[in-house]
Length: 361
Image (cartoon, rainbow, N blue to C red; front, side):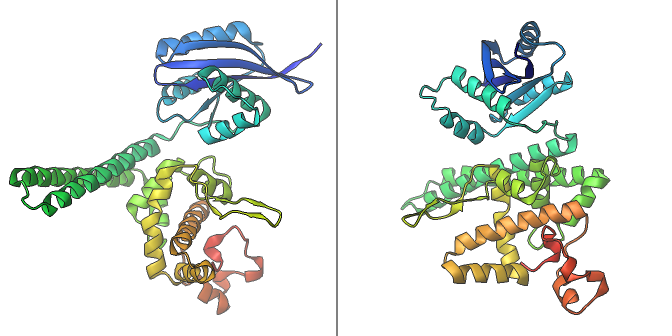
């Protein structure tokens, strides 16, 4: 008789409902999807999910709850399940969609999506999701709120430019637009001040921010955004995973000698990380010889400036991860000390390739 070795509940999360599929993996590695149901995405619905699962699963074998990261609609359920001491995994939507295509699913519905999530959970070894640290969660809320205000202000300034470009601008319209810009400026300053005070209140986070700000181009907002979006680099195991999470990983298409597509970044990741690294990369190129050298070499190779800027963004993000893990500030003069034979710089032959802070770019 077959023995069940793994149990997974795949959850397709929407704003108002949860479409779930229950599956199990047998000891001969054959998956089985055997139950489907829909629940309300409310506190009462969460309790009904647990009651329903209890009737259909083996009590002594834990159930892993797998769901997509769908905006904010999945968060209440994830927090509830974690508070119950259950195993929760949250997967990026593009991973599920790519996996579903491999199953040749032709009809896409909430039910088939939940089944794909369940089968993905059965076949893969997934990381355990952890609730964000409270301070990082508040930092993420503030940095994202500020980002929305900056976007709105840009839109309003564009409206102002369009109004001023007219033959006969409406004075009252100009007054209202200017008042909106002043109001948005005030809100941005309030958020920045609140974020700064929040960081100062936590000595540990304040130390991390100071270390990250030692990098060229990295300021308070950039450091806070990176820490908030990665939850202090929690669950980030290496630089490759970090760049993939940010969507800065390179996507290539090549087959034989006839198919050779242009390489480009995937952009399938956290857009806030990508966005926050743009201006720091430009600043680093301008004021730091290491990043300027990288930029010049890449531009001389392919002649595309923006492609080189993206490479600097990726390098800068990787260096933020490295100096965070080592808890040591960026040393702009490290290479000079190494070439001069400074013992404090260490033996260049023993330099580990993953320590970007101690390598030439």
